[in-house]
Amino acid sequence: MSDINIPKSIRASHISIAQLMQPEHANNLGNVHGGWIMKLVDEAGALACMRHAQRRVVTVAIDSMVFRQPIRIGDLIILNAELTYTGRTSMEAEVQVQAENPITGERTHTNTAYLVYVALDDNGSPISVPPLKAETEEEKQKMEQANERQRRRLKQK
Ligand SMILES: CC(C)(COP(=O)(O)OP(=O)(O)OC[C@H]1O[C@@H](n2cnc3c(N)ncnc32)[C@H](O)[C@@H]1OP(=O)(O)O)[C@@H](O)C(=O)NCCC(=O)NCCS
Image 1 (cartoon, protein in one colour):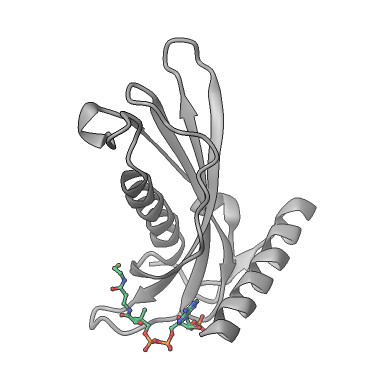
Image 2 (tube, protein in one colour; image 1 turned 180 degrees about the vertical axis):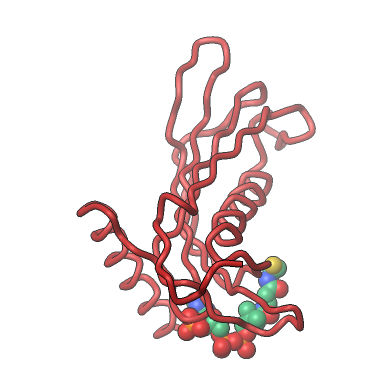
């Protein structure tokens, strides 16, 4: 396990997962069930956090999710997740969701979600995570925006 005082890059937490949407993932309209997408989003965010913390994690907060486009059965759902914030034991992951038609290759961005996870020690208690470091100006801005989101969540608590 790495030293938790050494900052880690956003890039190091990045994870991409893809899954073919099958008939069992359908809602009554024949598109992909929103709950299935939410499950994959939660898994992708958790994996990015596990990569960063090198610990198991639990979801503590999920921001509202807006689905801009339906995802169709037969599409490939692609999720890209990475960290945008670390507190002492908490982490925010940004998850970008895309749908790809595997025949035409056309890709649509369907939604972006922000979720907060807490790293746990072997006894199930929150444990410190390494800080996150920005390597580009864009990453720095993302981290500032994430700080603001976390500040708002804690205010609403
Ligand atoms: C997550 C959990 C372990 C936190 O325990 P806790 O006693 O509340 O611990 P703390 O108050 O120290 O909070 C831990 C961190 O979560 C953050 N947090 C707590 N509530 C939060 C919220 N609503 N939004 C964002 N962050 C939150 C705290 O700010 C703290 O972050 P920090 O250490 O970086 O400052 C506990 O709430 C829990 O077990 N929840 C259930 C998790 C779960 O079952 N998820 C679904 C299945 S994975």
